[in-house]
Amino acid sequence: MIDLSGCEPFASGYNRHCYRHPDDPALCLKVLRPENIEARYQRQTWPKKALGRARIDDNRQELRAHRQTAISKLLMNNQSSLVWAHLPRFHGTADTSRGPANISELITDSNGSPAATFEHYLRHRGFDQPIQEAVQRFCTWLLQTGILTRNLLPHNLVIADRNGQPELFLVDGLGAPAIPDKLAAIPAWRRRYINRRIRRFYLRIDWETGNRTDTWEASQKL
Ligand SMILES: Nc1ncnc2c1ncn2[C@@H]1O[C@H](COP(=O)(O)OP(=O)(O)OP(=O)(O)O)[C@@H](O)[C@H]1O
Ligand SMILES: [Mg+2]
Image (cartoon, rainbow, N blue to C red):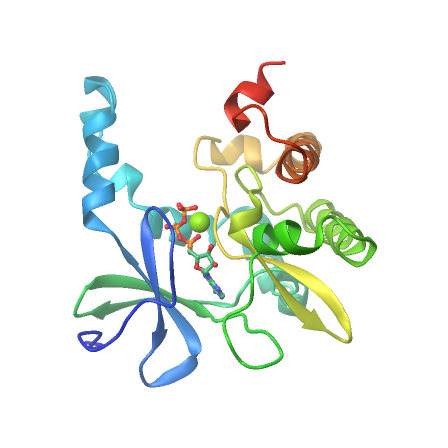
């Protein structure tokens, strides 16, 4: 059991708190925020409630997402460095004093601090040339590997320097939970799905760097 009682999260999303592992600063521990999981559960309609709370457990979904066909095949074929080119290495689960955690590589900046998000970068530097090229490399990697993700959101990607250039790492939103495994195993179908995610990603970047007179949801209906 990992004791997190004296630890503060270095970052938190809506659903999870992220801690540096107290005994290994190279690792990130993600623990569910029970209050938000409960709020999400209560907002669901009754047929969805009947499916239980496990369905909205982001740690469980992430675990399943790492077992997706594209990742399993690449790992089996000794292509792990390709898998981890844009994903933090995943190390399974562990029990902590704040509940079960998913363990992953902590992506850091050149000072060893947790890396900044792509959202932060866009806000401060805009969609400049080096990051446009990083986005292109990330999207090429998605199509090359066939790895499925949910909608790509700038706050779920962080930026780290690799060989003197910025690279994007997807720290949240891996997998496509609503897609049946049989469909996800068809390469042509995967390509179409990924191209849709990429198109939406560019729309989202436009929205984040624009005037934002509309909410993201409203801007989608135009
Ligand atoms: N492996 C990592 N390396 C560095 N920073 C990370 C890592 N994982 C998460 N983070 C930071 O922690 C934040 C929250 O993590 P994460 O997105 O996994 O939480 P979440 O609650 O699932 O998010 P959401 O609100 O999108 O559901 C990220 O936006 C990122 O800034
Ligand atoms: Mg997130």
